[in-house]
Image (tube, rainbow, N blue to C red; front, side, top):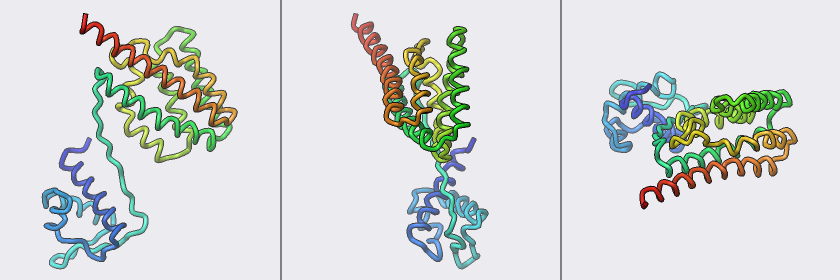
Length: 234
C-alpha cells in the first residue's frame, strides 16, 4: 500500500511522462517550475525525478538540469483509488453501471478473441456455479469466478488489469450489497444462456442476455430504495 506521499510522487511521474511524450523536451523545466505546474511540493518533484532517473527516462546533471534520455517505450501507470459505500443505493447503482460497461466489453472481446479451450474453461466455471445452485450453497464466490473468467478470456491485458484494479469495490456486488442476501439471484438462470451465446460467438444476443442480468440487479436496488422510502414515510 502506497503512502499519500508516494501516491503523489507516482502521479507526478505519470504527469511528467505525458509532458515528455507531448512536448518532446530535451531538458525538463526546473524543480520550481514543475512544482508549480503540477501543484505539488519540490519534495514530491524530487522523488518523481528520482523514479524517472531510476527507470532510465531522465538523467540529472548537478548544476545543469534534468535531461530526457529516453522517449520510446515509456510506460504510464494508472492508479485508481475508489471508495464505494456498500449501504448507499445510489452508489451501488453507479457501480452496477460501471460493471455493465466493463463486462459488456469483456463479453464482446471474449467472443472475438477466446480460444475454444478458453471457452471450455468458462463452461467449467459455469458448471461449478450450477452445481452450487443445485446444492443450495453460498454462490458469491462461484458466481464471481464465472464473471472474472469472462474478463480473463477476453485476452485484453489492459481491460483485465482495469477490472482487477477496481474489483475491490466491484466485489461488493457479489457480497450482499445493502444487506440484500438474495441480490443477483434472479439473474442466475440467464448465466447458462449467456454462456451458450458466447460459445456460439453471437455478440448481439450474448449482450442482450447480459443486459437482462444487469437490469434485474438494478430492479432489485430500485425496489429496495422504494421499500426504504415507504418505511421512512409511514
